[in-house]
Length: 242
Image (tube, rainbow, N blue to C red):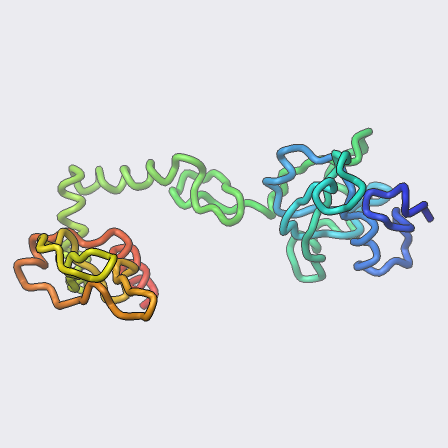
C-alpha cells in the first residue's frame, strides 16, 4: 500500500502479487517510469518480478505524467498505455512465465532486441528487419536497382514495366477539365494529367456540386498525358488485390 498523494498516478498500491489479475498488474506497473527516447520506438513492454516475466503489454503510446495528471507538472516520468497480451500471442508465450531476457541490473527499465519482433528483409540479403518493415534501411533501393540491372537500363525497366502493366495505365483514363476552384469557371488551359474517376483531384463546392467535371480521355490523351501519381498507386493496389 502507498499514499496516493505520493504516487504520480494517484494509486494506492503498486508492486506485484501472485493473486493480482492481469488488469490489476497493468494498473500497478504501466507507470510511472523514467523512459529514454528508445522507449518511443518499442512495440512491447515486459513486466518482470524476481527475474521472471509476469505481464506482456503491446505499447500503443507513451505519455508524460506531467501532461496527464494535475499537480504533477514537474514530473519527468512517463506512463505506458497499451493492451495486455494473452496466451497465443508470440510475445506473451515467449516471455510471460519465463526467465527475463535481461540480466539483473540497477536500472528498473531495460531494453531487449527480441527476435520475435523481426522478419527477413525482403531484399533477400538474409538480414532481419523489425516486424512491420519490409526492408532494412536502404535495402529497398538495393533490391529495386538489382532488378533494374537484370533488364538493362532504367529505360529498359520502364518499358518492360509498361508492357507488363498493359501499356500506359489504360484504366487511368479520365480528364478533369482545368477550372478555377472558386466557382468552377473553365480556365481554358489544357489538361496536364489523366486520372481515375475516384481521384482526389475531383473537386466539389460546399453544396457537393462538381467543379471540374470529368470526361473520358481521348486516345491521344491516353498516350500523351502522364497519369496522376496517386492514381498509379491506387491502380497498382487494385491490381495486386485481384
